[in-house]
View: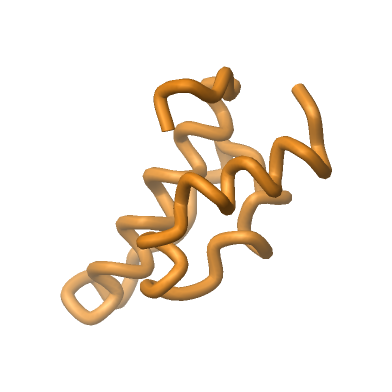
Length: 66
């Protein structure tokens, strides 16, 4: 994914969503930060999507170019 130029807020949202999806069982009160790009949420919806993160980021950037 390093070949994409993404904003800091998008990076924050990606990490936040990955934490939420992977650790929601262990962190039941975890909330997404207000900081970050909420438009990304509909692109990364479940754990399986994490394996396709590169393509998901590409799709997001095609729809919402920086």
